[in-house]
Length: 526
Image (cartoon, rainbow, N blue to C red; front, side):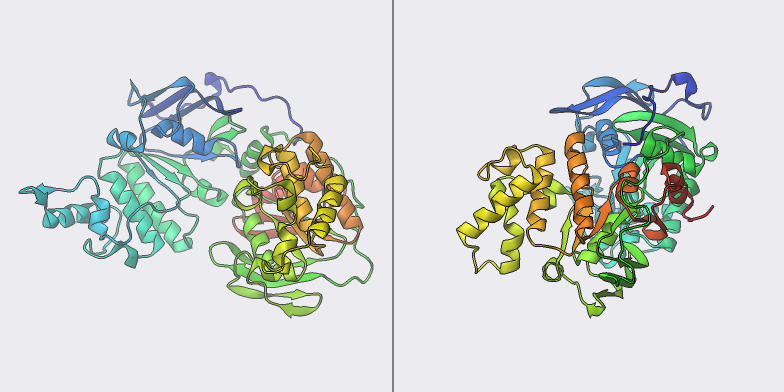
């Protein structure tokens, strides 16, 4: 973690005054708890009519939880919600929508097999003589489409239109109930530049009409282009609420990552600051112009044996998308990859595994561990996949491999037959590492391997990464914790807005503030 002073809850007097009107939404002291976790801790939030309010924070900061608390998806353990000056507790999104609060999510939640008009008026269909009034439906839908600046035919199939148009149709549907509050959760993640500007034009018009817009995005430039005010959350707590024009980008990044504008200097690189690449070494992997539309802009990258390459950047910056291209989990639209000097096609994880490339996903539960299998079964999954499922691994060989890695990584309990779901997060992560180390990879890609585990397990995993590099393995290490990146890396790649913006050696003069500056500015030297 980045060293910082304990954060005090902002005093109401410290929150800047905004319009001389009453907030349409006022959330005070909101606390949301899940078993063993306090997802929100006494958070205050307010939203005024006629503004675009950006909600910012890294993964796990509490953004989605706050939205779900407002719209009735999550139960509130403590605190109050006021909407238009009256106490409000909604039973769910439909109830919230009836009260003028509509949400449009990143994944458009509409029916592509229905017409545009049917999607817009869904749940509010005009009726005549006991049936649907199709003429009136299309006429009313046309009014809302015009408001969005869309000249499309209301009778056309929604699925025939681009994702950007579908996003605007979703907003049109939200406005059918005369929404006072519009929540846009990552609406631009799959849009190109022209489509984003089209959406922003609509947002500006809605803002002028007095609609309060809560905007969630990981694109810093977009936040500064459209928002009037920013609220920053970190680890389920309110850090600050600031006017956008008074909050420099560097300070915003620091608030999100460090929780304080004065991030402390990170620890010096514990590995050789000059890197561990052998003289005249040839790259193990060389990516040239590799990219995928909507995921990562084309980039060049060389990975050498014995080096740890750190990946720094905010959530949504493109770190994971870049890693997935290197592993073949996603297919590149352009560019090429050379492995040990020879052209290679990495279109599937199995092909990557065949080239001795292993990858641990940041989604440990969804894409990593198989909780209902034993520790032993989880460890040998990678080896068995490489052999093929028609050639089961001999029991004696499997047992030998499992016992060796349980001992080498200090997995607790040291019981191969224990169900993985019963182990701690740190030990589950060790089992995942054991799975891929058993395949003897030449390149190991680790996406957030220390997230959600205790400090002891973090230290053990980071020590292991250093040891693997010293033994000649190439490692890509992705972490939101900048100190971890600095401590382990020989070189650091900085990502911002789905683009590689810098690649720098990890030397003693590179510290957390400098990394924050690069992430915020998008330039190596500024």
